Every structure is written in C-alpha cells, then in structure tokens.
Amino acid sequence: MNPKQLVGEKATEYIKENMIVGLGTGSTAYFAIMKIGEMVKNGFRITGVPTSKATEDLALSLNIPLLNIADVKKIDVTIDGADEYDTHKNLIKGGGGALLREKIIASITEFYVIIADKDKGCDILGDFAVPVEVTPFAKEITINQLKALGCEPKFRQKDAELFITDNQNYIADCKFKEIKNPKELTAMINSIPGVVENGLFVGMADVIISDDGEGGIIEID
Ligand SMILES: O=C[C@H](O)[C@H](O)[C@H](O)COP(=O)(O)O
Image 1 (cartoon, helix red, strand yellow):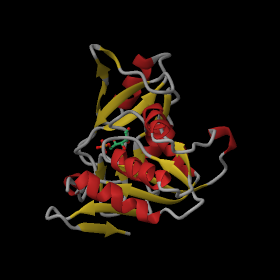
Image 2 (image 1 turned 45 degrees about the vertical axis):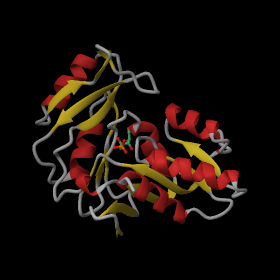
Image 3 (image 1 turned 90 degrees about the horizontal axis):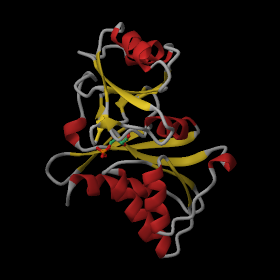
C-alpha cells in the first residue's frame, strides 16, 4: 500500500464515535478523510472541522457532517499531514498553503495526529522552506524583514501569479539553512507585523505516524 494511504488510514484508529475531528489538508490527509468518509457511510458518527476550502469540498463530497467554525470550542482529534518533522515532533507545514487554518485548528485540538511518510523525517528542520503567510499590504517590507532573519524568502507562485491562500493572503517560502531552535524562530517570524502566521508547528504534535519504508508503521510519541 502507498505509504500515504497506510499512515492516513492508520490515523483514523484514534477517532472514537461522536468525536469532533479536525480534517487536515494535503495528499496524505486525503487518505484519512477518504477513510473517514467510508466510516461515516457505514454509520459511524463524527463531525468534522476542515482546515482548508479544498478539505471542506472533499468532506462535503463524502457526506461527512461539518461544524461551522464559529461553533467550535474544542476538537477531540485532528489528523493532518506535514512537510518535515524532527525527532522532537516539531514540524514544518504549509506546503499546500493551509498553515494558518491548520494552526488555528491545531491550537484547540486535544490530540494532534500527524501523518507523514518517512522521507519527511529529519534530525534538524530546514531542508523544506518555512511557508509564511503574509498580508498583501506592504508585502515588500515584510519580505525584507523576513530576509533579515537569515533566510532566502520567495513569494510562492501559481500559474505565473502570486499564490493566494484561503484567507486572501500571500505565502513567502523562507529557506533557512538549519533550524536549530524552531521555538525561537517561530516567535521571531511572528513578531514581524505583516506576518499572519508561519508554518513551524512547535510542541503541537502528540503523535507522528510514519512508515518504515517496508510496508510497516512507526509511531513517534
Ligand atoms: O498546507 C498544507 C499542509 O500543511 C499539508 O498538510 C502539508 O503540506 C503536507 O502535505 P502532503 O501530505 O500533501 O505532503
């Protein structure tokens, strides 16, 4: 089985009947959501909270009942992907541009399950550029301030235009060399006024479900 499907389906074992479930974004979360759709079709009751418009559309197409975000106070379990993870379960997320909604959902989640194939594991974060969501206003000032933190930032493009997030902002992909202190870096990035949020998720994941490259599953907790 494809590792994304393997870890995605495994993660659904953390879901119990009547839970409120955060639904992640991306090609790995896709498999978890498909499995949840199958469970719902078979009569399993949960309500979902999507982390992006794409996930909302997918969940609706599978008849997964969704809550309005205005009515959500706490989420029991969220299952989401990651672009990179280290041995302390720190993450880089936002390769699909969904980091802001994902971090908000993660912040009210009791048990945060990350699903990511083993190639995304590392000792020190930094191979993957940190996605940073920035306001359109004064984006040139913001990118200069990001650069001053020691990275090479680039505005993400899509179809030769600037990529626009679900929240109508831009993404600056910030390539750092090695991120030795992700907690400090996340605070530094977020202290820039034009930054809305960044894709470093520090101390948030409760478990990372990954594969061993040979068809087996590894859980880091
Ligand atoms: O913005 C996107 C999310 O953070 C994704 O969860 C992340 O990029 C991982 O996506 P994928 O499972 O497609 O590699």
